[in-house]
Image (cartoon, rainbow, N blue to C red; front, side, top):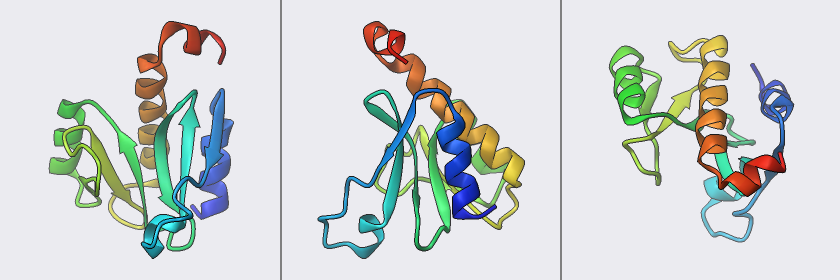
Length: 121
């Protein structure tokens, strides 16, 4: 999977938008981060230049299980490490599993939105 395929997949989920909210930061890695949102909350982000990993949300139990099973799933950098994981591309995590994890993250975040916001999606 490449960045365009990944981006197209994320944008295919209902109500998803994208933006690069960190372009003004001094940190080069953060400036190139593309975030995918459902409603007002992000559910996934990826560095569009390096395309080395994506960050997704899961339940704490799922996160622990994934990290125990896959070397390519690690606690997320600068996020709540109980629920957010970095999933490394080109690792022991298949593209199909990456897509399932992205969709799971999308659902968790979508379901956490206030009811009025969910209704507009």
